[in-house]
Image 1 (cartoon, rainbow, N blue to C red):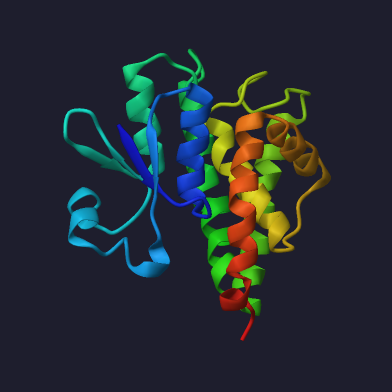
Image 2 (image 1 turned 180 degrees about the vertical axis):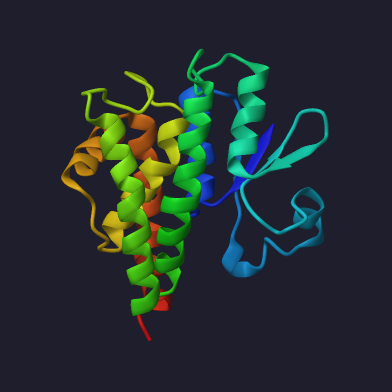
Amino acid sequence: MRLHYHPLSSYSRKATIGIGLRGDPIELVVLDPFKGELKTPAFLAMSPFGKMPVLETDDGGSIFESSSILEYLEDRGPRRLLPKGQELRARRFDRLGDLYLLDPIGKYFWEKSDTVREKAVTTTARAWALWERELADGRPFLCGDAITLADLSAAVAAYYAGTEGLPLPEAIVRYEARLEANPVLRASCEAAGPFVESTKPMRLKK
């Protein structure tokens, strides 16, 4: 199987982190969206909306959207990201993280307007409050001692909040440190870093 992705893309990072935690032997193929590689006929045949990441499966099919990719791999086994008895919890926080952390932070990453920043700060503050409440009982991650699907969007979002100067509650700063102590998470941050720097000129506030 092959995953087509880019190290800067939030949802690509979510998928590659999940794959790394699972240990799947999947070939990682880096796309260059800045050279139109999301618009080629070959890519659109796999991902008709021109979105990444996309997984080429070993049966000749393709799956796009990061959560769908990880759910597909979990169904193949073994289960590592959806712990038994906490599947709904993991999926709930995965969805909350996508909608109310990754999406607003991602928009501000590329569009440095005061309006977009204000919305990102307001929306993510409400979302982080949910994470703070769930972590208040001392658990290191949302489903216990292991990083699961519930944590992946939040992990990527916290990293980009830091690079873009968006506020993080102190409890989330500590949570991010625990996440990034994992070698898979740390490697993902290190891979993204050079692209954060190289895209700065095109992302500066006009």
